[in-house]
Image (cartoon, rainbow, N blue to C red):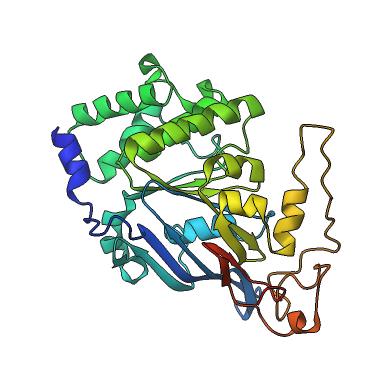
Length: 337
């Protein structure tokens, strides 16, 4: 009971249950490029003006091909890498204006499950120590209470309690990802950023982990930012999906609406690549020609215009705004603006 009081004690109150838990506005992350002599030569524009809201017990999926800025967005929100510009507002508190000491109190409210379960766990520590470590850092509970909670979380995520003293290399990939989930839950967060949490797992194990994430979301009242390149996985988990291309969010919509009525040409191409199990059903395959432009020198206007089959003159010079086309469905494309 004392441990749970400590876990709940520092959380800011949510005054309006309908208000977003997390608001991200104009988030940007540029990585500097320097010469061997330290001279600034340019920037890699990894994330450019990303906006979205995340609600309590809701799941927002971020999708797009490799290098589109999905993982950088997630890490920037948690300040694992410092954003270049923008606003990250959690329960009414502007997080990017806090120094590291002030921000430490909010770190336990926002945790992350990493893509690679092999490298995300310290091989020199036993799994019990790994789960207790976040609680120790935030000075939560006594040693006995931390051990008891770690045991409970292992059991809840499908790991036997008698494996508490084993090392990460003694577990399979799926078990290691379960341990990573248990570690994220240790400090009772409100938000978990899931960075490709099942992409490194076998297909049969993926479904088990996805079902586990769904169960604990209801049990612990969690909000998820689910980052993935697999649209079929995101369709199973997300309430809303944001599609990213070259650091920009080009479309955002409720999941069912996005799959039923994709608007952006890039979204249509992504959806057309999803295999259909029934061979009698056919889907028109949209092939995107050309290579992804360099984020060092992105195209002017619409960033997708160099590969878009519907490109118009204005696409090459005018950047399209993200505008709402229907209830909750937004798209940045001159075909609709």
